Amino acid sequence: MLPQAVIFDMDGLLIDTEKVSMATFQDTCFSYQADHLAGQYHQLIGRNQTEQRAIFADLLPTHIDIQRFEKDWRDLFLDQLRYHVPLKPHARMLCQWLKSVSLPMAVATSTQTAKAEELLERAGLYGFMDAVIGGDQVHYGKPAPDLYIKAADAIACPPRHALAFEDSYQGIEAAHTAGIAVVHIPDLMPANDFTRQHAVLIADNLSMAAKQLGWPLENMDAKAK
Image 1 (tube, one colour):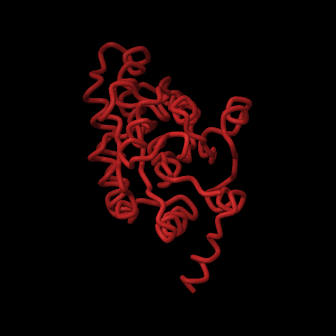
Image 2: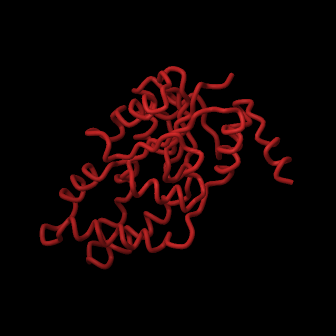
């Protein structure tokens, strides 16, 4: 059975940027001689800017200006993606298929909206989306359900009739708490007891998830040939 709409996370799910983010974060830590922080990236996955700053306040030495650190990291990250935003496997094909069957699509991401829209545009996915809800549009980020509730409302879909795709534990909890069935596609965070309890499906990539859901993406592949 098809849902009435699909809501995607973005980084590490549609676009392959989580590894770039981690590498540039670590480089920024080294440049600030905050080597101890370089191994803490997993704490930041799925967090919005406010929550990330709270983590920095706990972990960064007091002589480091958090906003300057954050800007240097962001600039380095965006510079790495200036000419190419890599897609996760089968992301475009899945979006094309969902479009072909007239399913509304939205993005619910902790990334700020303007930045998310820019990255989706560069990746060639923005045109598929009926709404992009960024972390700056809600007061509480993931794992709170606010992003997913707002995304479902933006595409006029009751949460119980939507399906979410997520790569992070925080995102899975957010979608589940919002009353949205969620598929886990692990990226930097492997499947664990939490995801097995809360996700309706766990798959290695988007194509495998579609196959298990009975969605014939191979039809899009045949059309492309």
